[in-house]
Image 1 (cartoon, rainbow, N blue to C red):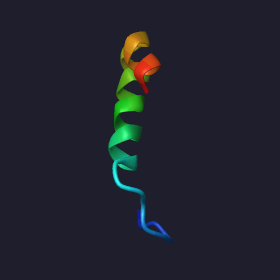
Image 2 (cartoon, rainbow, N blue to C red):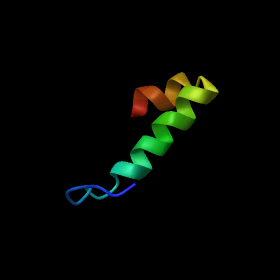
Image 3 (cartoon, one colour):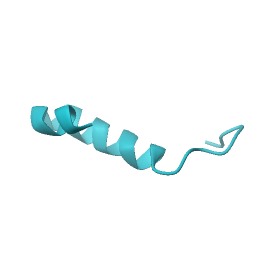
Image 4 (cartoon, rainbow, N blue to C red):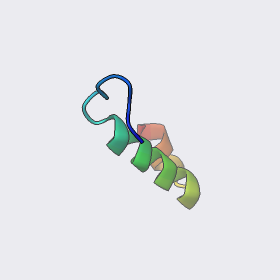
Length: 33
């Protein structure tokens, strides 16, 4: 996947953390995000 514009720093990492927290049902991590 290529973005049409530069991706803000940390965006992909934040998305990966959010997805992992959702899959693990980690409510504390979701609250932090």
